[in-house]
Image (cartoon, rainbow, N blue to C red; front, side):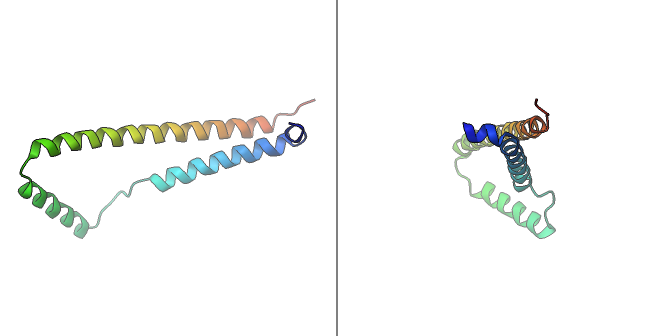
Length: 102
């Protein structure tokens, strides 16, 4: 506790900077690719058509895909909230470290 009181400014600035750095790294790491090459798009279409033709029971696959899409949406929301949390608290720690105390 004594270490924190002596070095409060350094600790708060380093925590704020680290939280901001982590949040930006996670954001840019997770950012999806915007475009596909024409060959990749054609390969995806062929794979989709082959999967449609070879699928014998569509009901079970449809239920699994619904579950997986729900899971991915939930994970995306959690990641978005975590990034917002890290960015806000990183800025709060940095801002608080610049406040002058008597």
